[in-house]
Image (cartoon, rainbow, N blue to C red; front, side, top):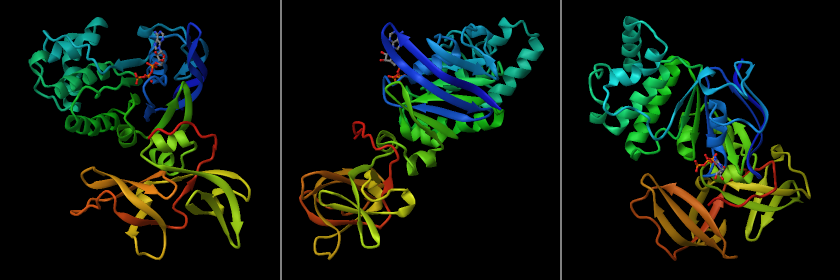
Length: 359
Ligand code: ATP
């Protein structure tokens, strides 16, 4: 059964429609992310689920019950923000126990629940430490424990790791996933960080300008992007646009110096307008003397650690992104090369209306 369902939900502030007819269904026990650039409406969507905003129209259901006008404290949800709302002068126990005390739960029961929850977030034994004396990552885990101890059906998280350094973010990402699996709680997670959304989510929705562009698993989004916006936002890609032509047994799309052979399985037929996504890691760099591939000159070299990202200038002046494993001797700027790719390396994008490139 779906835990959270949004049917044609909209939100306007004055005449500004910031969430535009969203349909969404999040399953029980699922880790679901809302991913998109700044201002696309993710937080507003989350705040409507939490009860901090009321939808302008549409239906919001949680566990089958319409919740549009149900106040925040009567919803089976809990919220964790980037900015923690912990009490710094109180100890960990008091912070986590806060919601349970409000409910008037017996003291022994509170102590048992808090201890269990601190164990889940790997903070067993921290009961008497003051929050102000904890690291940022530990504080974030206290905030998560405080939200989860109330046993919400759905935990809503708004960029909860945004303020932490990268190393701690990666560590807490793994912990969040572990906590989510262990408690079986439905998580709805807002982020603008595509790597984070891919790592954590069972499924995700990519949002753009108040709309959902695509919903799917991380692999579906990466390998079968429905729109050029999704292909560019989920990782990097090269978008290639042209009309499908038949040459003997082959179907091809030509865009300037690029000739891409397309697979019949893409569903494209002769004379269709096609938008293709050719991922940088699917392109090989050959020496300039190679008898195949297209001419290109190294324009920019970006060392990313385990990989190198090259911006390659083609004969028509456009740039193509090419990613290779890191090499002790990367190619230098200005060097002439040739680029090639396997026949069916490019994927067809279903919706050919090209929105602005993200790169
Ligand atoms: P970010 O990642 O920057 O937080 P977001 O995708 O979460 O972005 P929202 O916070 O949902 O975006 O905002 C979407 C749009 O709605 C923005 O243009 C924002 O300025 C506008 N907006 C949000 N809250 C209000 C409000 N209370 N009144 C007026 N406009 C608002």
